[in-house]
Image 1 (tube, rainbow, N blue to C red):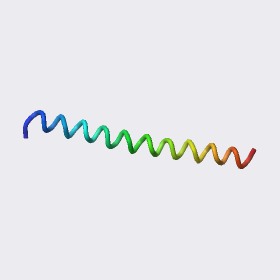
Image 2 (cartoon, one colour; image 1 turned 180 degrees about the vertical axis):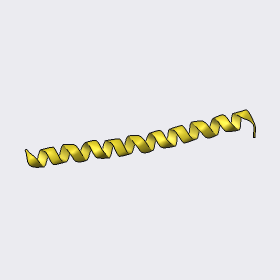
Image 3 (tube, rainbow, N blue to C red; image 1 turned 45 degrees about the horizontal axis):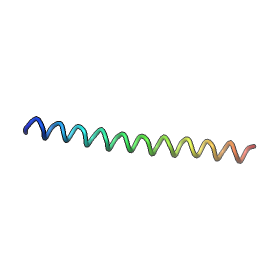
Length: 40
């Protein structure tokens, strides 16, 4: 394995997990906002 291949792999993992975390965070935040709207 060359260093560049490892770096590309790490960057790809960071982007993948970052996007996953962002989508989960967005879903949780929007569901909380919807619940508050229903209660209010």
